[in-house]
Length: 114
Image 1 (spheres, rainbow, N blue to C red):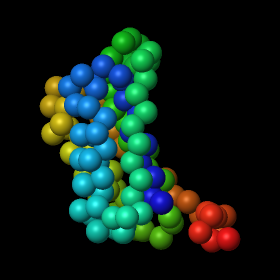
Image 2 (image 1 turned 60 degrees about the vertical axis):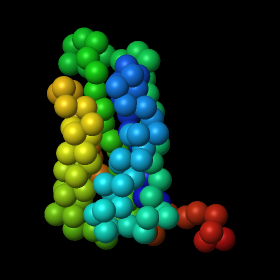
Image 3 (image 1 turned 180 degrees about the vertical axis):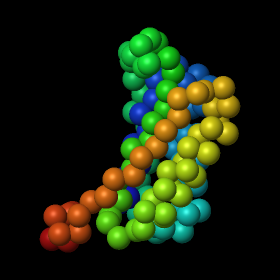
Image 4 (image 1 turned 135 degrees about the vertical axis):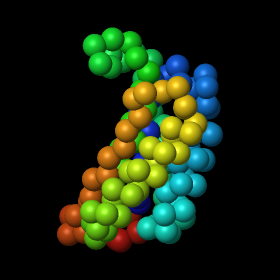
C-alpha cells in the first residue's frame, strides 16, 4: 500500500506505453515523500471501449487509495502532482484527473499482519 490505479482509454497506450505510465506515476508519487518507495503499487487499466463526455474521447484518471493520516493539503498536492505528470506525458489530452481516497487503519489487514 498505497495503491494507484490508472484508468485510461486504450488508444493512449499508442502515445505512451504502460511501462512508461507506471514508471512516471511511481516516480512522482515517490517524490512526494509521503510513502516508502517499496510500498507504492501502480497499475494501468486500459479500456478498449469507453464513453466520455457524451462520445468517444480519450481520458486518463488515477484512483489512489492510501492509509488514512495525511492532511487534506497533502492529499490535494498528491493529486495535483499526478495530474501534472500525466499532463506532461499527454500534452494534448484534455481529460486528466486524479483522486485520493483513504483506507481506515482499523479495518485494513494484509497477509504480513497475520
